[in-house]
Image 1: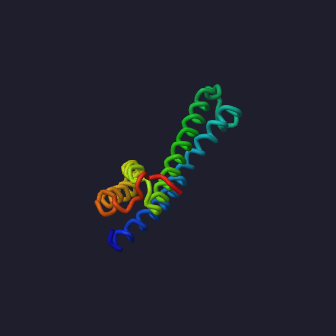
Image 2: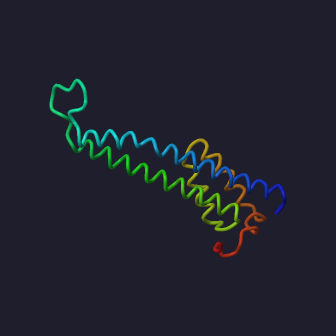
Image 3: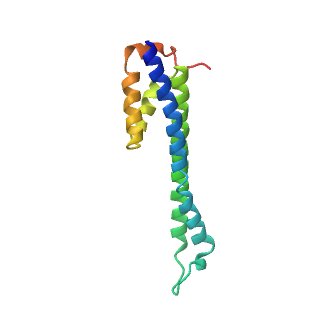
Length: 138
């Protein structure tokens, strides 16, 4: 593997860490939905200007469940992206890194750019050969 490819691999790994942080931060947005859902569940009359009956409780439950699920999925994706960055740095788990690069493509537009560059880099035979056999180890 050439020194330029080594540098590209290092940069792609760093970008995976940065992108994972961005995904984790964006995954915190649904906390607003969870909070609103909890208010709907436990204090439905606290909404101002309501002359009619309070909103149904299942609406609050839907917001809490959907928001919580979105947070868990986002944080899981962020953790997997960060782990892929670590694997790239250590040159381990080539297949996992390829799968995570493909998953990063789903996060348009920055994830798509990162995923495509990672796939192009990992598809080169010299880079594949640099990964440790078996993909395991510490």
